[in-house]
Length: 88
Length: 191
Image (cartoon, rainbow over all chains, first blue to last red; front, top):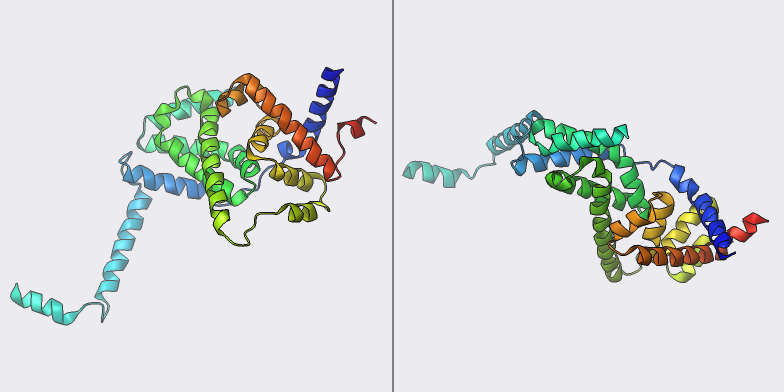
């Protein structure tokens, strides 16, 4: 009798949970890309493999924009640099 | 079965490292993200937290892929890692909640109010969230993931008889809360 009750409860719970078993969770559209991007970064920084072309391209683009920003008027402290240049 | 064999091949390739290894691992990410996020969503009660933990689990798995051993058991190996991270995430969230005045944590009164009008899936999720974490965890592993008791015991790092007892108590508590919220229990369905 106890076993029958146990089986009954088990069937009942299985039925109640079927809705969760059968549903597909709506994952964020960019979830896979985020994971892969992080893996890409980790792989490059952990020396697991050389950085991918895309990672290199991103790094170069970032460096270029930093350089461009530093060349904008007012970005340098002219007096300090002029002094150093003269001393050198 | 084919999937398991494919996982083994992918894990071997990933363990070989290099770009080919990374691409192989990315295939594993595509293949396993759905069930992993689902499992973590039910454990943590938040899809956003589940995605964060799943992402962390994938990255850690990538870094430690050589330790996976039999690649056909990649899913189980990843599940162990994710389960530990979920536990830590929940513990950290609990700590944060203690310091956040008026946080989202539901008081018993608010739970009562929130659950009173729920039905079906929403009520199920609500009742799951009201269970203590060990009970919720074992209910999800058994009735959503449909894992055999022996595998659950192994995952939880407890004996099989302890797992059986925990499951029995969790079921009892689940049923009590479910019926309290107005859901039909096993006896109601029989009639």
